[in-house]
Length: 239
Image 1 (tube, rainbow, N blue to C red):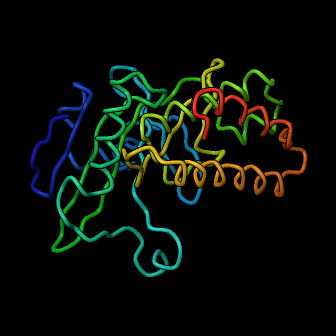
Image 2: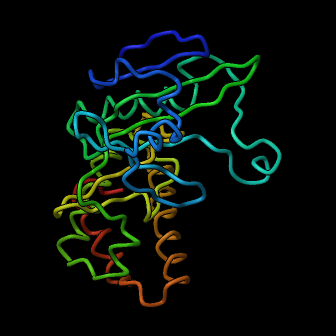
């Protein structure tokens, strides 16, 4: 990862073609002006897919606050050091995992804008071609037992590495060409493997599946699916 200072803060990048990015390039308005916005994903807030001059597709995401705090402070965070900012921390963990061969999107760049004691931030990652999140996938067709087993093994591999995913849910798991990926490592950590947080991570994922099925009763998820995922997980990481 390389970092440069801007008039507004700092930009870090892992992808060489991102070395020329300016703070303005982290605004969707710039890409819209160039007619380079090729898609979007709507969750709590919108994430934008943009096409670069070199024909890469990047995912641009701004860091927004959620919950009660977000009602009066939409996107400002207390600055306690560059490495501790949401964007730089997420870019760093993604770079480590990507270099180690884990199934995560390729990290591109991050932007931090300083103002007084506060900062705002953005991140860019590579778009995983042909990917659907699991909610979208399961609303169309079920996974096979082998796929659920493989997903459980994938999560176990991350846990054995000490990867704590702060928001492991069905929408933060992608499937593309029979390969699963984990995304959105905001507030994620590399920590000592421990059955307590690993159990909590899995419980969070199960609650997510059940919540999504409550919204979509036809979602292709069942207790049998979860058991296959658990079997795959326990084959590598017997808690």
